[in-house]
Image (cartoon, rainbow, N blue to C red):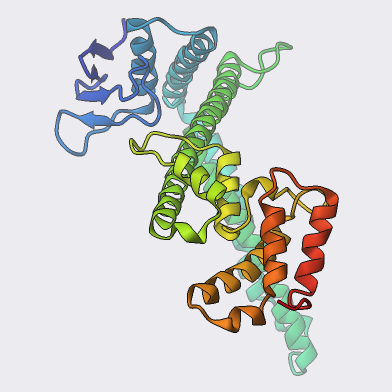
Amino acid sequence: MSAVQVTKTESGWTIVDSNGKSFSVTDKNQNGKWDSSELCKSLSGSGNYLSAEDKVEAQYQILQTGDGATEAEMARYERFKKQQEARAAQQQQITQAQKPAKKNFWQKFATVTTSLMPLFGGLTGMFGALAMNRWSYNSGLGNDSALRFMNASTGILFGMSGALTSAAMLSGMNRTPVINTYQGNSGLSGGLSQAIEAQNAYMQELQEQNQIRFEEMQEKQKENAQKAEKQRNTQFVNAMVQEVNNNPDAYNKINAEYIESLEDLDGEREYTEEEIKTAKNIKTSPYIPYTHIGENAEDKTKLSPAFASKLNALIANYEKYNAENSDKKFDYISKANYTAIKTILNKTTLTEADVNKLKEIYKNPVDKED
């Protein structure tokens, strides 16, 4: 029987962990699972938290209160239980191994004596090096003094090595190794095997959990990106509708009707990529019917977006000064050429000859007399 208890509520679940602390989880998406994006709130006061082990146990119990667990979820839970059992067995072995074994007097004497031998040797090397007889060197020359100092340093290092070895032996002589490495020809002991199995299970579980979190994060990012894109598109279309309503003469009739058809009074419409692309072409070239604008210059019977924008600027200058009854419009394009452009653009479809004619007029817009 698990120490963790789960109770289903109207909004989610109440959890009592292995320490008797209470927590609440709200099932925000109502899918019957405790997902990573859903929050866990302590009901036993601030500072309390649900341990990782209790969370895994609670998540599995939550699945059982609903439709049940999938095969993959059951397999993960089984590995989790085996990992817990292996850790418990390993901890028991460590506890037993840490109990010092009783030794008789001679065993203790031999252990201490053996441990101290490197220490005595080390100390002899240290002091012997420092107390080197003067007859070994002249001591009156710099080279002799340097050799003596080097010999002393070597002895000191040798002595320190021995002393450290002794210290390590003395520190560990009352401890029994945690793991009995070999049992005849059977290889590693059961405790080590269980520890390795537990570690492998833990790493596999961790990898799977990380993969799940990564996929959930990707899904959340995709969802947020889609929401942001929808909001941008709605704002863009609303602004275009407002522009058409405020200045309908600045738009070709076909373009104005198309923008008006995109208006979404309820704010629930999701615009397609094609609709937004068409709206952007209309914004860039409002005087050019969107039906005459193609993807690029490869379509010989349509205007490329770049050329449509340039031709639109020519028409816009004429319309601006024409509205002011100013002859300055003829500085941009002659009346005959303006009429020719409008005639071609009013066609339902264009031919390659029509596109070439528009490009010819654009290159020489004022070459004809009115």
